[in-house]
Amino acid sequence: MKIRTSWAWIVLVVAGISLAGLLCAGKSAPRDGVYIHLTHGKDDPHRVLMALNMANIMSEDHDVLVYFDIKGVDAVLKDAPDMTFAQFPSSKQQLSQLTKKGVTLMACPGCLKAAGKTAGDLAAGIATADKTRFFSFTKGRILTIDY
Image (tube, rainbow, N blue to C red; front, side):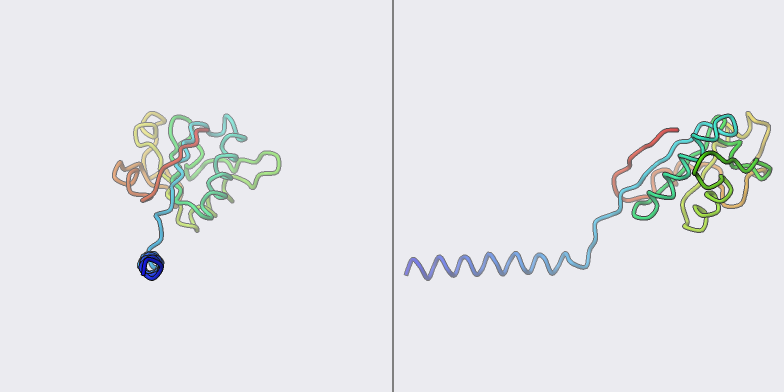
């Protein structure tokens, strides 16, 4: 009798685990986000291109937000030079790829003002920063990378 009771419990436990697995199968865990903070522009093309390259790589399987402030706003202006360095794709190529992928690209409005620029001076696909978007670009954890 004890053996039958033990087997009954084992069958119930296995069935319960299986049912839980089926119920959770349709739900996926939220993707983690990568927040890339870029403070440099044409003064340091290596930093700019490395940050954009990381954004492109990470966007393959993570939500990504790139935030441009301080001198970083210079990299996302309509009249920004197309920066190149070493093996990296150029800045304009990478910004275009990120825009096509739907990556959130935001410039600091205060830094734009300090540079004598406005939102109208930003390249296509670049928005001014909005604090709501900072907290809603991902539902998972947030990893920050600074350049």
